Image (tube, rainbow, N blue to C red; front, side, top):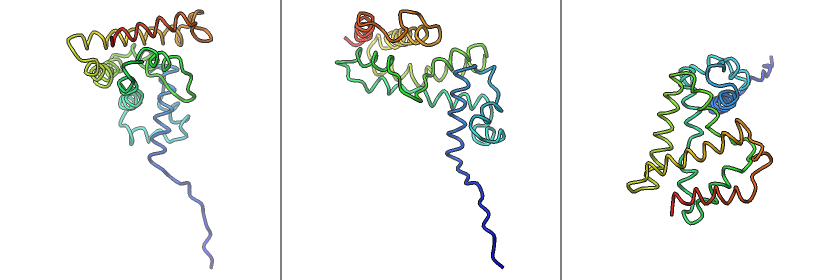
Length: 187
């Protein structure tokens, strides 16, 4: 008697975890921490809701992993200092398909005290402190704060609360001003 070949779905824990993480980043960036449900995330990832518990432990830990995956000071600290301002502006104005910005996640999570605390801790540990060290010197922390304020402000008014002046890109004068301002944190 011949055995029938039944095809079982291939399970790939890394791929499933990555799909849940990507779906969480999208959902948290679109609707915020409080208004995003685990069923919504897992449906978008094509995964069983129980897998959130297996891979992440809880919604809070999923949020933490999703944000930690996006925050990376090396995006900035690996730039050449001589052309720092121009490089930062190029990053901020680039449209890269599939690239996610952590700022919407953080801002939309600020209504929840736990998610806000996670955001703040990760921002400090993963971005501000390494950026401060990279700037160095007595003003390193102030420069990291100025960098974050300028980059965040630009992102908020380009993406979350779009200003007409930023619609369709920024003009050359604004680009030069932004580049010079970011460069002033180096020079």
